[in-house]
Image 1 (cartoon, rainbow, N blue to C red):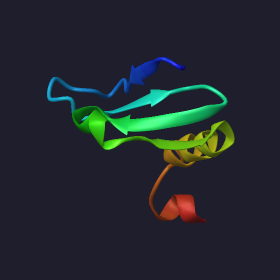
Image 2 (image 1 turned 45 degrees about the horizontal axis):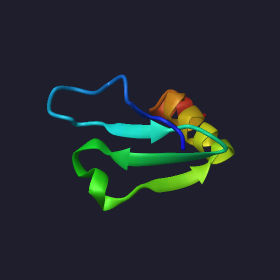
Image 3 (image 1 turned 90 degrees about the vertical axis):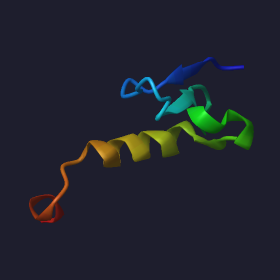
Amino acid sequence: MAEWRKSSHSNENYSCVEVALGPVVSVRDTKARQAGQLTVSAGAWRSVLDRLRRPTGRAAAR
C-alpha cells in the first residue's frame, strides 16, 4: 500500500488533503479520514494537477 502524504499547504488545523501515489492515486480529507477516499488513475491525477497549475481569469481563457 502506498504511503499517505500531506499537502504542502497544510496548516495546524489539518485543513488539507492527503494523497497516496501509485498506479492509482487516492485522495482523502485529513480531518475526516474515516469518511473514505477518492481513487483515480495516475493519468487522471496528472490532469487535475495540470489544470490547477494553469493561470485563472479571462486571460487564461483566451
